[in-house]
Length: 116
Image 1 (cartoon, rainbow, N blue to C red):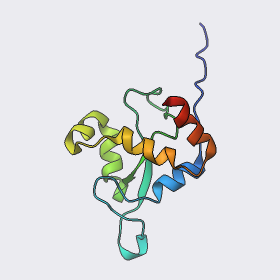
Image 2: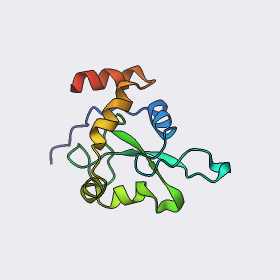
Image 3: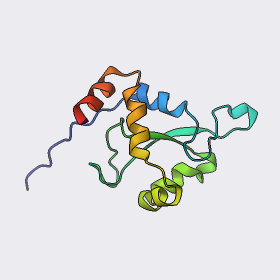
Image 4: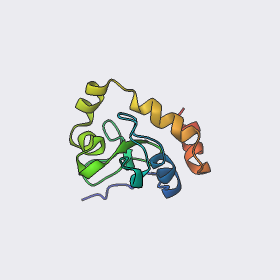
C-alpha cells in the first residue's frame, strides 16, 4: 500500500495566539475572562481544505470563535462548517486571509502571498 504524502502545512502557535486575542467574529465576545467575557479560540476552517477527521488545515486558515463552555460558536462551527457559514452569512475565508496578512509570523504572511 503506498504511503500518503505529508502535506506542507504551516503550524504557528504565534499566529494562533494572535488570532485568539481577537473577539469572536460572530458575537464579538471578548478576552477578559475575569470580567465575565467569553474566551475565544483560533478555529481552523476545514471544509474544502486539506484535512479530515483528526487533521487540521494550515494555521493561516483560522478565525477567532468563542468557546464558552464548549457550546460556543467554535463547537457549532466544528459540528457543521457549511451550516455555520450559511447561518451567519460571513465570509470566514476572507476574515482568515486578513488576519493572516497581518500575522506576527512571517512564515504565515509568506504562505498568504503564495496562495494569492
